[in-house]
Image (cartoon, rainbow, N blue to C red; front, side, top):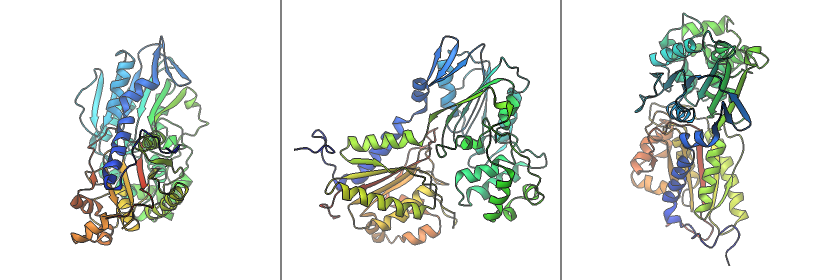
Length: 454
């Protein structure tokens, strides 16, 4: 008789297919969080209004649109379809030239993970587009992950582009969680931390965002150019000093920290946000729920391990393993899948190629060696760190396969070269750029105590 957790119509997943099954779950997850279908599903034009959930925005006349981030192009195409092409003018700042351009939009190719001249030019165009508006005007902001680098302009005129590049390089290699990195970014920028929204006042403003940060930190998406900022300059000084970053900053930015001349960002009580609303289109919750459903559909007892996993990758791996142990004990002999979201932190310690996801899997490989277990970790944006892959997958046989090829996991970890370790084994995950980003997805599988690695 089939148990409640193992439907009769689903065959028991086999360990020999572990990596294939994990990849099916991940790619199925990516298909479930596509931007364009989400826009059409959650945003509707109803007569002279645009509705998103409980929010209704009046469309008195065609709006101006500013889109920036990894999902900018898809969001613009979908919004143009939803509004029947009734858009006054727009600016798009994305990481690549689009195959299709929407009329009345100016397009800029920004840099990622570090800003480039396109980031600067796009920010200037966005500021110009929303300047001089009146209360009857509407600006729609389409915001997604990656916008912190893709849309940038220095608050102080003596800060040059090379300074911004070096500042961002120091931040993204520091090992700080993304919300702390963005606190620092906000206070040196002319667009971040609500400053783009302040320029658009007194127009009605509607922000539709795809979240690549913890769910309760919406103002951190792309460093929050269109939302009020809770962080303070005092936090900036304390963060930078505690992490030992001030001496590493370029001179023009270092002086602002040493001389305590950073300017405060607009706060939630600021009247310039009185006509501003926001709506979360997609988040990491959508990704992990899609992954859980996919795993369940393949015959696993699947559970989401909810929590704040923006911590050191080794600590997170140990905590996830403890949760996997508990799930396996609760369902003895059955294949189980633990789904985890968020973004771990992983300091760069060497000159190699890789990212936090591949480093996570590489570390975890030693923890599941010889066991009927699997771990997968990948970014939903299609790129992990400075590698061309989105992540990697490993099972209980991976360590033995690596040793047979003379690969030393500890050496690859020390060199921050996890990509070449998994590329050699053929276990990287290749999605290409996804034009989306809702943080990372991790899968932990246990195929039951009755299974042994060959």
